[in-house]
Length: 437
Image (tube, rainbow, N blue to C red; front, side, top):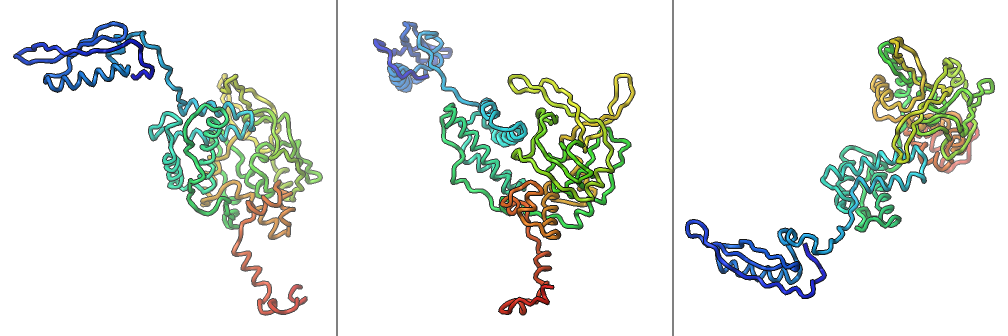
């Protein structure tokens, strides 16, 4: 341990003396006094020449107030204790980040960000990192490589880098709690794949396979989500999954064929009481006849949603139950205390497992739930002649977002349009009205 402030009046002098050990062996000892007047005696070497070198080195260290562990034991509380610089562990740093940013985000966004950030920083933990200032530019590059080898999309990899960057920006620039170089810089290169926008258009064969796949044998299943109905509803409306899972019977006017998507302050979600559409943007959806028929075929049942109760630290300590009238609730067979069984209907929180099972039975791969929304948008524009603005308004997007994210290119449709008119009669010729008819 080194003390940068020299102790005034302390002039250490080291002396050598020898002691004879068994079988005539000699051991040289060093003797000196510490600033608190306590004497230290310790063996240093069998050879006199080497012992003298160590003595000179020790005197120099003592003059500089550089005391080793044995000296510090003798000094006890004589030297003022130096405060160790505080280093933020990964665990403590992330906890601070989550607490500071929680109020800026919706419950859903905060939940998803927390899971994602924890997962990315777990990669650094597994590589032996304990403190945030240990994570380097190279470590972030290794994270990118790991995600790339796991076949993650370009958008997912970019999001991972952005998440890591946000944590350091908050702790270094905003909170001033961390003093180190940011491991994420503008020089980081991301692997180039198929672009940041997913360009997957489900084929008619795949959609048909999903719709015609049989349901599982539900007799032995204690909990089941109505995924087939959910998939059909998304394919017939282009709705977001969250809009479907929180749809309630009171949102629909089936006589006039209207679905009113609104902010619902009393709707129980998996995060809180109260649900709102994306961007808090309400819209009326004019329903196709097939959607109305689907809804009329469903049974209206009493349902509920469990909402977490959290303490001051944000930890879930309990759940409260709120009644609802969900259109697509989960069916559960619950065993009561008296041994009887009761059927209950509750909010669907996730369809991941059921969706994976449905795809496997249908023989469909590399398809996401949101691809059904893209497929519906494609049909609106291709078969019904909806403009990007009209289709976007229907499914709840702006024209720009609809063009960028929900309008994949179909080579089949391009070829069909090319075959509508002979090119030789189009190039350099006036419009032939007979061709157009």
